[in-house]
Length: 236
Image (cartoon, rainbow, N blue to C red; front, side, top):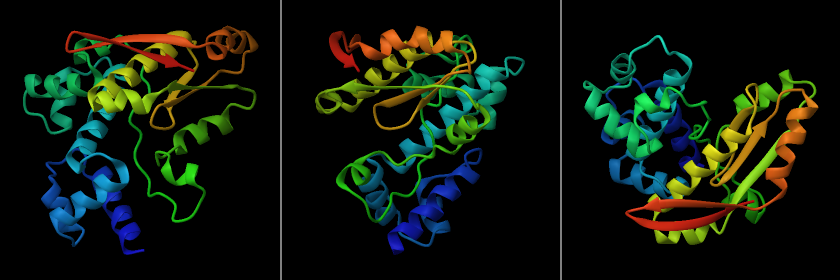
């Protein structure tokens, strides 16, 4: 129970201070625990470091503003999330999104790195092992769209890809996101709802559902490159 309370406090603190200069030791101090204990607990539950999670959350929110606020400069958004130069922000952004911020401005935004939530203390094996992320925004949009469809998709053999390297897994996820975004309509919304699981929430128009049905019912081979090596994953 103490671990759950600590994770709740840590996740809330991170979300409240994403625009501040926060480090792992700062978070640990604010949450009254040691840095080593925090890192060990966070990595064991979410399979990522505290710093890595902060960077991904910052880049996710920055990407959203790049896509939805074209009037703002890249440097202005970079400074908002704690980067003093365009170059340092561009390096962090490319590490997460595999493209430069300027290139992302022409991309339809996808909720690729939603915030974590605390995992349940009880449940079956599937529920305990899946990624624990906040789907509140998706749920709110689902309630607003009274007549819509969900199109679900995941990547086959993701464990095998991650065994090659986590970077390979990240590239496969990015490629799947691009495929689903390209297949979606103007009013459709793409969400990542798990480790390698995505959902398209369609607008309330049957043609959109019919257009998406074919790629969702077939296996799509997704080639991607990592360090000049070509890999192939299957999008289900």
